[in-house]
Amino acid sequence: MTAELARECARYAAMGWMRGTSGNLSVVLQRDPLRLAVTVSGVDKGEITENDSVVIDENGEAVGSDKAPSAEAGLHARIARVAGACAVVHVHALAPVVAAEHWPDGVVLKDLEMLKGFGRHDHEEVVVPVVRNSQDMVELGDAFEKGFDPRTPALLVARHGVYVWGDDLIQARHRLECLEWLLRFKVETRDIFTGRHA
Image (cartoon, rainbow, N blue to C red):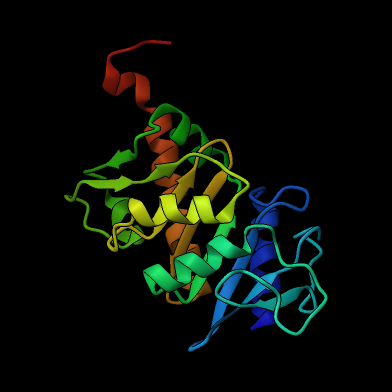
């Protein structure tokens, strides 16, 4: 499992979505009590190894280790508990952050074939929730839970990044890749659909 975390981190780093030491991934190890393996803090995700993860509890605190989990570990645990996710991916791709800037009340997506890859039907109106950024993971978790829609496996954190989840790291990755495309389309066609011109 930890080797898979490292492989996925390297993939996202190569895409430019985990610049510097930013971003983090997690996978659920057990449900009762909740335990997740999450990438450690302060490590270049392009060079991360299978030793660079730590087990956390439902509050994001390290269990039986002196390694420091990511600062956002508490939100990973909250998403896993509330959404029933088995894997959570957090990256700093640009399109989600720009989309959150334009649509701070939620990004509406509709009539796009790529929605199928995100786990929704292309004819559905999908609203990707946006929450204000905070260094307080309880505050972020409360905002996430308040706007949580079990049909939409993603959360945009304004001026920060995006969280996407799934049944495993592969499904979460596929959903993230599709969502990034959808949000990039939304941003790049914004002037067309609002009648504005550059």
